[in-house]
Amino acid sequence: MQGVALTPGLVLPLFVCIINQVQILPEEAVLAERFGAAYRNYRQRVRRWL
Image 1 (cartoon, helix red, strand yellow):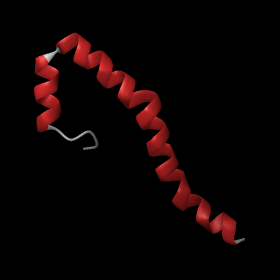
Image 2 (cartoon, rainbow, N blue to C red):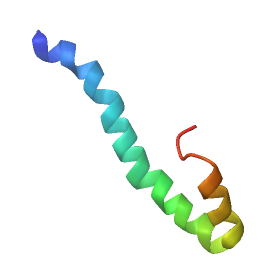
Image 3 (cartoon, one colour):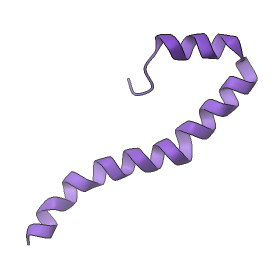
Image 4 (cartoon, rainbow, N blue to C red):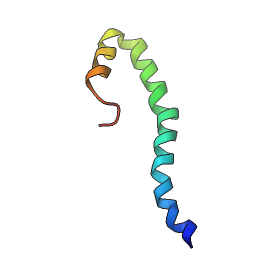
């Protein structure tokens, strides 16, 4: 039963890692290519995870 109790604490960090690799990093690359310096300036002012 202890393993079941640990599961919720592992789900969020795992989700964050997967979303970061699968969604966020590729999306940021596309935005940087499309918007160039304007997007890079935006990234310096705004945190990735609000």
